[in-house]
Structure formats: structure tokens, C-alpha cells
Length: 223
Image (tube, rainbow, N blue to C red; front, side, top):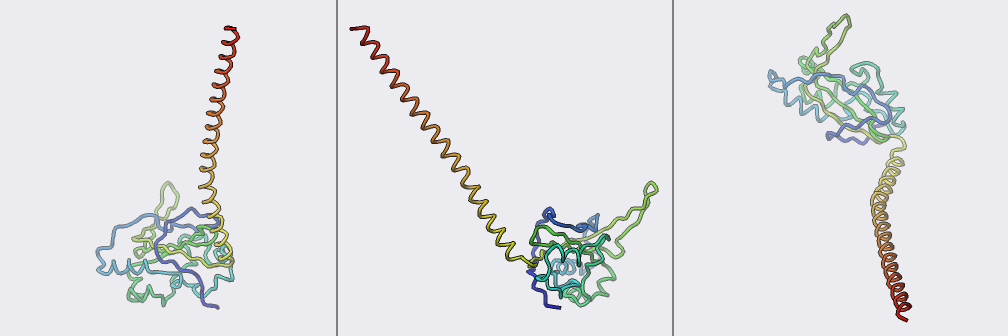
């Protein structure tokens, strides 16, 4: 496998409405308060927000060989909730920073979800949950499942096949749109100004013509 060449953006992002395809973006339903019983809780949360694509189980894939939709369908798309395809590697930096996988799993679980947010990017979410967070209950004869979580972290991934061309087209379209957005109001304003000037000129010509007619008829009467 070729080393991943994905562009990794670890900073939090604003979730956008998915445009192409989505997985279930929320495997956890109920946010819990902080885990005050764990003195290392804040360290776990910090590690959660440092997770990148390279911590996941398919980090060796080369996205340049896949278009974004095919990559999503093959490696991410899953009808299960939570997603069973997305997992951390056992030797990921996340597990290393929280004392190892076995130590982490004594108190917590971690789930992932993902969505294609535009033609260039996939948004990943990591959900930190308490161990055994899934609760089953029956209501009016129907089985329901609740999921609970402490914290959610997000990162964005791009760099798929055709990324440069699509990004260049997107930038070009944005420039064109900005020109149109700026030009149209200016053109309209100029058009309105010209219309007003023409009306003023016509009105003045009309007044001059009327004055000339009055003088002529006055001269005829006095003659």
C-alpha cells in the first residue's frame, strides 16, 4: 500500500450539510457531563481532539487513487450505528497518549462517523463515550437504543483523485461569482443613474419647448 497523501486538517470544523453522500453522522444521542470520577479525563479529551486520519485503521490507503465517492463507499459507508468500519489502530497515537488501548477501554469507548460534506472533503467525527454506553429499552412494544457520549471531535480530510482540478474549478467559480456579485449592483446602479439623467434632460427639454410655444402664441396675439 502506498503511504497516505491525504491533506489532514486537525482543527475543528463547522459541520455543513452533506452534498454527495453521508453515513449516520451521529452515533451518540445524549451528551453527558464531564467524567469527574476520572482524574485523567481532561487528558483523554485533549487526545481525542488530536486524532487525525492517520490514527484510523485504513491510514495506508492512497486516496489519490480513489475518487471521493468511491473511497467513501468502499472504506466508510456502513448501515450500522455506530459505524463498524471506522476504528482506531491499536498502536495509534491516541491510545499511546492515554496509557494504551486496554487501559482506555476500562472506562471508555470511542466511535467514529463520517460524511462527504462537499466534492472535495470528508468530515470525520470521533465520539468519546462511557464504557457500555448503549442502553436498550422497550417503549410501547418497540425496542429502542440510546447512545451516550462525553465529547465529540472533528477533522476534515481531502486530497482525493481529481482534487487539484476540482479545487481549481471551485476557486475559478468563486472568483467569477464574486465578480458577478460585485458587478451586477454596479451595473444596476449605473443603469438607474442613466435613466434618471435621461428623464431630467427630457423634462428640461419639455419645459423649454413649452416656454417657446407660450412666447410664440403671445407674440401672435400682440401682433
